[in-house]
Length: 120
Image 1 (cartoon, rainbow, N blue to C red):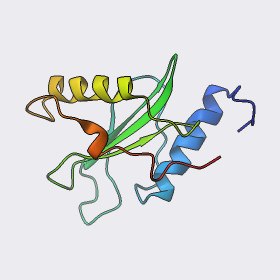
Image 2: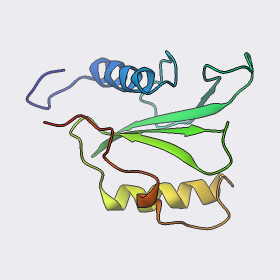
Image 3: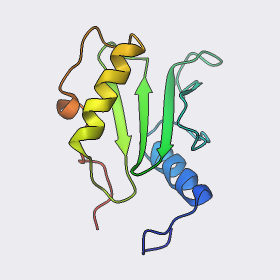
Image 4: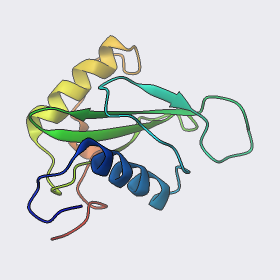
């Protein structure tokens, strides 16, 4: 990726895919179409949807992964600039309620941190 932040869609998609693979979610292409993409993570249940990911490229670039192999909301969030906007966390919480992944809005900051994001 270019250092100046002027990334094209293909670079963003490749970077998000690489970040997912680096964290053990497997090699998946997630298009930057702001839609949830379901797929199987590497595990002992081949062919079964065990997770989903979304890559939203708008005013803010954010990729999110949900892992269905665990009971609690196991979420990995990625941004190319290494920041997590609190407004994004609030929007994600509302989305998870709408998708019926959570019973009510939750403070997602306890699950989504910048601990694994690249440091500049």
